[in-house]
Length: 64
Image 1 (cartoon, rainbow, N blue to C red):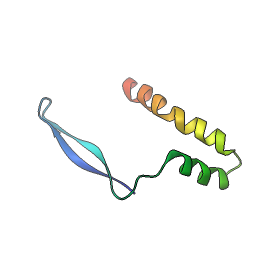
Image 2: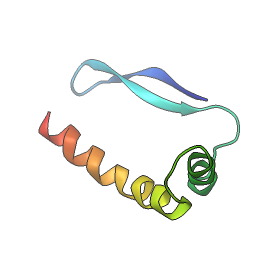
Image 3: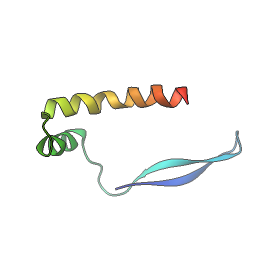
């Protein structure tokens, strides 16, 4: 389960959330298989989307 904690950036003088992993991390392949089971898309389709999500999030957060 994902959690976050507050981290302080001394240079900017602000707090920001930082992701914290508790327990064992889940592999992307496991998530893709589980999503494929409950949807109409294939395992490879889900893996393709999950593989590209980091780049998309980077682009979106840089435009905000």
